[in-house]
Length: 259
Image 1: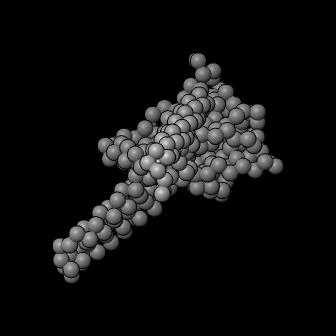
Image 2: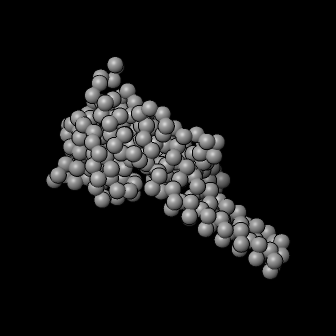
Image 3: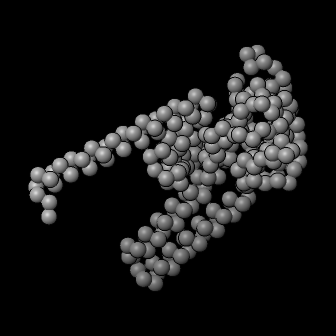
């Protein structure tokens, strides 16, 4: 057993080491966040990248997803539809029936199961706990669908942001866009950026691709807050009403951002 004096010294040393590691990681997280923001990454995605310097990446991702899910769900329930604004494009219509069916079945099954358990075992705490878990699961399902609605693709003065709800985003400099056209392709990458280095193609779709964007291959794209190293000459994406969106973006990018 350590003498009291030695135990105090060891405790102080451990405390100093712990705080040193914590402060170092916090400083690294802040630098990572600021660097991502300088590259034009959204605040939430930059926060995820910064938090991943402090804890495992998957845990950081979940911690950021939770508040985003509730914010998106609230915006959707209050009727916000930002895809109707100029420069924005929806991509959720093909998912509507799927999520409506999934949410309806889960809600019906949860309610029926809860009523049966109340009738069989009575009003006990664990019956309500199971029901709360079902409601929480339903909130996540609706929250993800809501994020597809309230986080559309967005073309602004400097960048084109392609999104897949709160899960991911691709940032393309507006100056790198060489052309926009409707293009039907079967590839469905489910919100992940998949590149084909040999052909210079990139796929970022939530269903069959419906738009192709021709790019300057020297442009630096960003995916989930990190630079894309492979050169991409054409990126394919999913958008509702592809013909109208392609024409709108083509006209907008043909002009200088300042005009």
